[in-house]
Length: 310
Picture 1 (cartoon, rainbow, N blue to C red):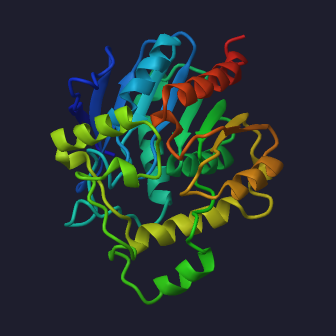
Picture 2 (cartoon, rainbow, N blue to C red; picture 1 turned 180 degrees about the vertical axis):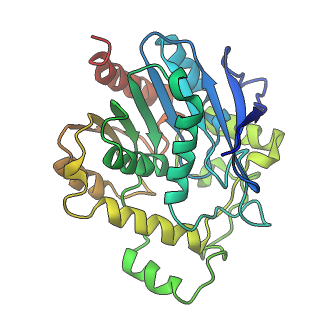
């Protein structure tokens, strides 16, 4: 990694940037930079916000502001291939990666760059794909992080049988889109969405990417799907989760349509220090849901994090 340079935030009138933060690029390779962000002031430790597939830092401004009111410092990143980070392919709407170890390198780069600025305890707030990476980090670096809140973790993808994905991937180029209707992120209709019941937040997020179109991402590639299948298989391998000793709060969405809640139940039986909560009525993106659902999330979050402030 060759250093840190200044980057921009992309606020909109109804999605202001929380005060006190800075955005930056981390150059991992000559053709690869990832965007990170840091809000350093907070007496209760640092929450590292790790988004899911397609997401970007601005989508979490509301959540980051709420963490700041709870007196946490916050760090966040855009994974490679999404947000304002470098894209791997000429088509920037293709969500592409060949291995989730690449995402592990992004997280490592963020941690290394901020280093002693990250006040302890270090806690994760990770959604879906981000939670997949978190579990691998907790397994590989058991003493670095003190706790994790995982929202709808991607431990198995619905309607994508792992064995079939691996077989088909032998015959399909990794940079091809997965089958199905292409996603146009700029014109997505609320009525067709699978992730939230909240029209206000759905429309806000649509305005963000139409204001800064470079943040948008479309469908995944076969390479991403194969990489995701490999990573979920690793995590769900017997003995893997049992080795994790870090306290975990896992929130599963009752109305989930994208990841498999049955895998959450399996993981909850395997993790040594876990509390699993089913959030009534919620779709996949719990933090983009209705006020009532988000209030339930924050009630659970506050109960979990109170132990780290004692």
